[in-house]
Image (cartoon, rainbow, N blue to C red; front, side):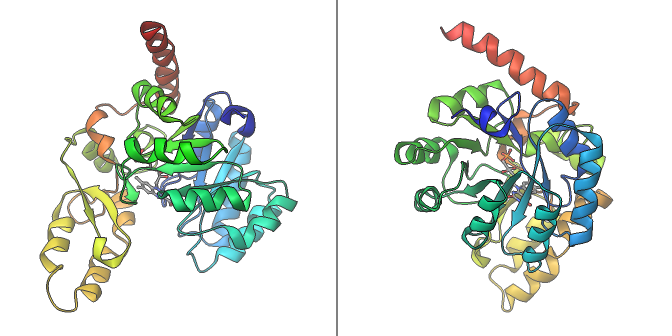
Length: 307
Ligand SMILES: Cc1cc2nc3c(=O)[nH]c(=O)nc-3n(C[C@H](O)[C@H](O)[C@H](O)COP(=O)(O)O)c2cc1C
């Protein structure tokens, strides 16, 4: 089944959930432009999530989703809100959604986990999820170890449910490449971060459009939760304390609240500027509608060129 039919959207483009960033203004703009906007519930209380869902319903009559980070302590409460508000599409990260699957199925909710390993993709298909987002290590935020170019064709050989490619995509080339590799749609995070509707601080957006291909690094590998972000004071300090005693405690102190610092205060030195390697291909802050329309118009041109 086509991802556009499954999700009842015009274009096969999902906005990746981004904690402290993908709130109603960005999410509704993506849905209104024909893609699928996704609220990031990570770090939210149940009341905050409820408010954001209601805001979204007021800003768009198009489908939108909610992302559930399964390691959050208040996950059960967030799921209650999702059910109360009759959200129809869920993406999940940081674990298996197995414990909620029966509840979601009963409520006719479409469930799409994010995976970065073949064995997890196979497990998810067996569990009966509707589609999967396959995220390569080029992506921004928390990542796996394998690049999209390798991961997507590998997983697409082994499973039959629709695949949405994520990690390293910002334009029509990425859309076409993803489809060639076996996906039926794309999810972008970093591209939508540099949009007018994104609530992140302008310093954060400017840092993305000024990034080069080697501007990102992966920190927190040794704590088991690798994160890709732009190089800055924070990442320099991280690598400096990596081999010193009590580094875990020091890491915690360094990274707690660091994404919020970047998003809300525009602290490009000591904030965590999470973003993907694709930032180097993004040179302009655009409206969400222009991002989506440019991709779809240029995709059609690209297709006619290669026929
Ligand atoms: C700042 C930031 C925050 C993110 N937060 C989340 C999150 O809360 N939940 C999630 O499943 N993925 C999260 N992601 C991953 C995105 O949803 C998306 O899969 C990823 O950005 C795709 O790769 P790209 O950045 O190359 O487009 C985040 C990514 C970024 C850049």
